[in-house]
Length: 161
Length: 399
Image 1 (tube, each protein chain N blue to C red):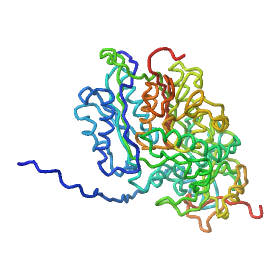
Image 2 (image 1 turned 90 degrees about the vertical axis):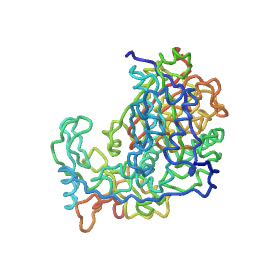
Image 3 (image 1 turned 180 degrees about the horizontal axis):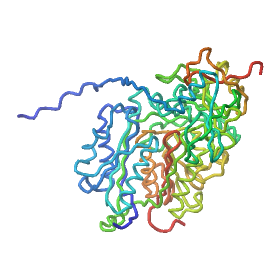
C-alpha cells in the first residue's frame, strides 16, 4: 500500500432527500366531540369544576387545577380579538400568503380560540391591521358544509360593522 | 457523593454562517467538542460523561441524530444523553450537565453539538408541527407567527411600536459587527429595519434571526476537580427553570395567569437563578446579559423578565441607549445575541459560552469592560420552556 497525494478537490457533494411521512392521529373523545359540534355550527367548551373557567377549545382536564373538566358548555359565535398577525411571507408547505390569524375569546369562554380571519382585504396592510385591533368584535363564520374539522370555522368582521 | 459547585472550564464556538459544505453534521459536532476541550485544556480522556443538545430531528433531516454523533463526541464507553427542549435545547443540556456535576456524580462533563438550520428550506413547516393536531394544525402557526402574536400584544399593552423593535436589531447588529463569530455582522439603521419586508406583522425580516449553521460546546467541572488541578473556571452560581402552558389562547383574556405579551414564566426562572446565586438587584449586580431572543420583540420582554427594566419600560431604556456596549450598567447581548446567530440546537450553549468569555474578560472586541458577573437565558417550545443561569468569575458573594 502506498500513500498517494490528496485527491484533487472537486465541488462539494450533496445528498438530497424529502420526508413524506403519513400519520392518522386519534383525537380522543373530547376533541372529537368538539369537532363533531362544529359540523352543527356550534362551538363547545368544557368547564373546570375547580376554577370555573370554560376552556375553548374543549379540553378534558384543566391544566391549572389538574382535575377533569365536568360540563360541556356551548359558547357564543361572537367574541373579541385578543391578538392577531397578518402573514405576508410564503413558507414552504404552508398556505400561500397573505392570510390573517387571530386568537379570539368567544363570549362565554375564558380562553381564546385560534382561527383564520376571512373576508378582509389584506393588500393594504395598515388598513387591515387597524381593522383587526385588539378588542375588535368578530363573528364565527362556518363553511357551507362543515365537515367536523377545525377547518370548518373562521372569524370575520360583522357585516356592515 | 458531595454536592459540588460547578465550573465552566472551557467553551468553544465555531463561526456561525449560513452553510458549511466542508464538513458532515458529526464532523461539525466534533468541531464544537474540540474547540471546547482545547479551551478547557483537556482531552476526551478526561471527560466522564457527555450531554448532547439536539433540536427536533426533522430540522436536520436525520432520525435520532445523536446516534450518528457518538464518536464525534468521544462518547463511546461513557454515559451519554441527548437533550431536546426546542429553542432551549442548548441551555437545557448545560443544566443537565450541571446536574451531573452538582450531584457529585461526575467531575468533568462535555456538552457539545451543532446545527445546520439552512439545509432544510422547510424549517417553519417543521416548527408548525408542534401545535395541537386536532385544534390548531389547520391554522398555519409557526414560531414566527407565534412571536408576532406576542409582539403585537406587547406593543398594544405598553404603547410600543415597530421602531422600538427596530432599535433592538440596531443595537445587536452593532454588537455582532464586533464579534467575529456572529452570523449577521452588518450594522443596520432603524430605517432599514422598518423598510425590510414583512414576514408576519409586526415582525419583519430585520426583526428576525438568521438560519445558522455552526457548532458550540462547553466543559463543566466540579469544584473538587478544579481545586485538585489548580484550575480557575467561571462558576455557575445559580440555575432556574420554569414552564408555561402549551395553549397560547390560555395566555390572554381576563382569567389568564400570564400574558402572551410578556414572559412571566421566564421571570420566575430568572428569579430562581437569582435566588440561588444571591442576586437581589440584577440590574446593578450583573454586568452582562446573554439572553435568548430570536426576534427583536422578544428581547424587550425578556429584558423585563430578567428584572432589568419594569414591564413596558424596555423600549424607553433602549431608546435612551441603555443595554448597549459602552453604556453604563448591564449590557444585553454584547455578542449580537440570537438575533444575529441562531444555530438552534446550540444557541443556548452559545449563551453560556459568551457569558463565560465575558466574566473572564476574554470576549475581545465585544468585551464589556470589567465584567465579572453575567446572566444567560433560553426559551423553547411555543414560548414555553424557560431556563436561566447566573455566572461569575469566582465564588465570592455577588455584591
